[in-house]
Length: 284
Ligand code: NAP
View 1: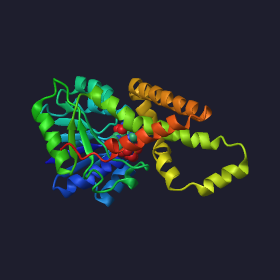
View 2 (view 1 turned 180 degrees about the vertical axis):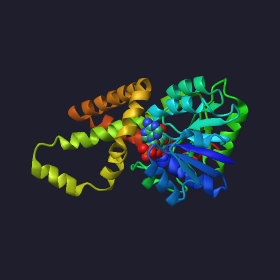
View 3 (view 1 turned 135 degrees about the vertical axis):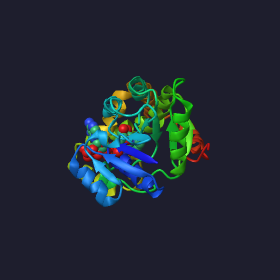
């Protein structure tokens, strides 16, 4: 199949590697010509261009730009693509994108491959990034079933575990397990930086090991992506942040009042329930 990828960064480039390995012909569109040149050299695309018109013959187009640029790209694509072309995206937020993009293109299917890294850009792209990872498809009642099937078929061929839900459900779920952790993790780094004694700070930096590495990882990721998660999923993220603040306040009270039995109960419950999030077998 001829597949277009708009935006050759971490996700677009990684998709390019995998789709080419599966014998698809990949036409990649970048803003900057040097990104396209690198994609050709790395083997992420068969054809590179800076003009969207180069993907006029694609049957399927993945829009892999930053969140804010997805709907504008779909609007531009809508001016020349044949109506049969299916457009999908990989954005980390779905309600805003699906609403705006579907207005421009009825054959649009919202999608979110849930794989990533702290680094951004094509240089960080890698083959196999999506293998055994969740891929959420977020159709609406108006999304054509054959368009959903095509995107699911390609996602399944990448080794992904498929999930299907309304965009709003996706956004509330990822607010808890993806967007909230980014903000908490960033706040953790900021809080450590507030240490006023230089020797304490330096020792803390020298001692920071696997626990700090795990808990600070997502807060030290791509700042542009984190900001857009907050901007485009504001309501769900705020609700999650408030839920988190409530829990943190309770823990502060338990520590301040030396209520060790209640603190232990809190930690015991967390110990027991964490596997429900991190050790669940995939649904499909
Ligand atoms: P990235 O590495 O920064 O790549 C984005 C690419 O889009 C850049 O290479 C850039 O191309 C191009 N681009 C930037 N601004 C653009 C604009 N205004 N118009 C057109 N193209 C533009 O970002 P990413 O991590 O791959 O993220 C891309 C999408 O994947 C986002 O929607 C994000 O929500 C989603 N996503 C990210 C992750 C993750 O963990 N990173 C996971 C799942 C989904 P040039 O080099 O040509 O400027």
